[in-house]
Figure (cartoon, rainbow, N blue to C red):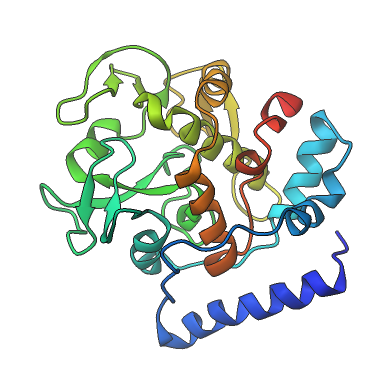
Length: 268
C-alpha cells in the first residue's frame, strides 16, 4: 500500500523508538494518556480499505496493519505497563479478566502476580513466544497468574462455572467466557489476529471458527459468539487508549476493529 509522504515521515520518526529499543536502550514508556490520533490521520491510515467489504476488506486491512514494528518477548513486560496502565493509578496495571488493579512491580509467574496472557492462545497455531504473533501487543494483556492458568488455551464461548477469584468470568472443560466489560475487547483482539496473520509471513494462517476444542490448529472459536460480544461491548476509552499507545509508541499499527467495530460484520 502506498502511504502519503507526510504519514511516512511520521512513521519513520516513530520507528526511531523501536530502533532505540533494539540498540539496548530499553522500551520507552508511553505517556499516561496519549492524545487520540486526529480523525483525519486515522482515515488516512485506512484509506486503502475505504468502500470495501468481505474478503476485499480483510485483505486491505491485512496489508495496512502488517506494516508494524515488533518487540521481543522480554520487552512485552514493560510495554504492558504502559498499554494497560490503570488510569487512576500510574503505578498499576488493570488485569484483563479480573479487572483488578495490581502494582506494575508485581509481574512474574508466582501466585498473586500478573503475567502475559496471550488472548489468542499461543498453542493455537503453535507460534509460542516468537517475535510476531507471540509478541503482538494487540492480543497480549496483563492477567493474574492463577486466572491465566484457568483460561489456559481454551476457546471462547458462553457458559460454564464461575472462575474463582475472577468475578463475572465462567469456564468449563473446553471454553472460557470473560466478564461482560471485556467481552468485546476479547473479540476484537481475536479478530485482529485473524486479519494480521494470514500465513504469508512464515506464521500460521490464524482464523476464527465455530468450534471449541481446537487444540493446536491455528483456529479459535466460536466466531458467532465473538461477533455477539463485539456488538454487546463496544470499544470504551480504555481500549481506545490502549490501541493508541500501541500505535504511537510501540508497534505503529492499529487494531482496525477498535477504530471501526462495524468492520467485524462487514468481514464475517
